[in-house]
Image (cartoon, rainbow, N blue to C red):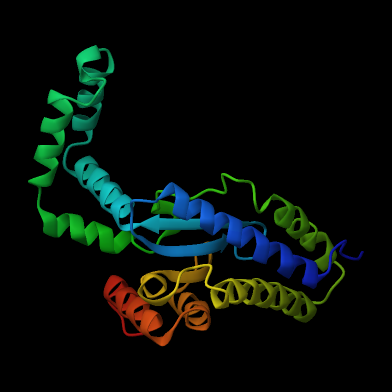
Length: 231
């Protein structure tokens, strides 16, 4: 069996889809500060999806986790109280009181949760390809398992490496053209190629290839603090 696409086609489509997905991400989070944008895959490229997160979304998720840890029934009681009361549909008395209480919570515990989930795509507030930009790419990638059936383990590994390099090259091209921003705006965002159940070192390897030394050092430091190890 042969693939119905070339790696050049995969590169070009990934380049185009990444541009569209990032611009859509910026539009969706216009008033927020984006700190990460990654193309996420299954580990064997069963799919490729854009994931990103913002500082504001991270804060909201951490607060939600904190509340659930402290009093899982509190959220449900508030929801029931607000659900059928028209006066509260515009987020009035009870909703404001609810958030006032949240802001008084232990900020150290919330910060600890933020550190724990900061680099985990599964906990990000923007984890989907709403524009369908990667649909054709994923159709291509679904051909790969059958193609690999006739190859040796060594050749299969080489194929996966070529796919990874192709996607990384497309990301690098986007970056070189200023798609991810320029100057300080770009340096605030970590661009990466991530995978399910990824180890720390592989996260760093792709990040080093895709980011400036300044961004890479900051990302490495945060991972070391998060995992409590020296990388």
